[in-house]
Image (cartoon, rainbow, N blue to C red):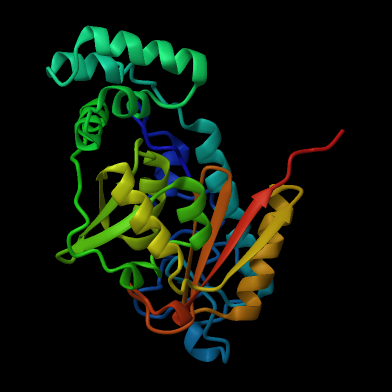
Length: 306
């Protein structure tokens, strides 16, 4: 999955990740699939139509797979797509105005306060906002607004946040590892994600692809975020398996074997940083499935050891 960022070009990897193209092994819709569903693997030689085959699943990214060989071929192409997107994505680092200068320009702190806080940060480490709050009594919401101005995003509130309702959207590991908090759905198309001090656009893009929702993200006051995040981590999440493979080929083989065993009615694969996230639906699909209606498989590729 490409990392979404400013200056990202419409490369082959980006288009593939969005379903606009594949490497030739499969596509979201094979010719003829609209009337007589056939195996989504373009190189399938079986000639099976789905209505003639007792095997009706697994379904992967909207396409039926007629047998283990086709499952492996299609999953191999999907893993290659995600790996290619990671290699091809070029993130243009935007030079953000430093937080201290943002706060000074907004009149929230003085230049003397900034200088003193920077000195403490240099000696003791930590975040600038912490020293501004601790040494100069700057309110947390003021620091959060400055961070939001840096990122060009809104400050979000925890109104109407129901942790149990949001827990099925993202694996628990990702909430813990990436510091993201699914807040709420707005209407039928928008999903709001909250962060404490920085927006992770790679996480946003992956969740957008997995759910089909338009993700809007913003910052939450750190104290409020910490409390809500802890409450959500105590909720019931979908079951998850962790696998580590030595190569993309080995990872694809593991995913394919799991798909053939589970036979989900739908499944999708995206990448978040170094994790490959396979989600499988066992029953009715939807944006907010019951935790027992989905299973997540989180894969990674181990680095070569000397």
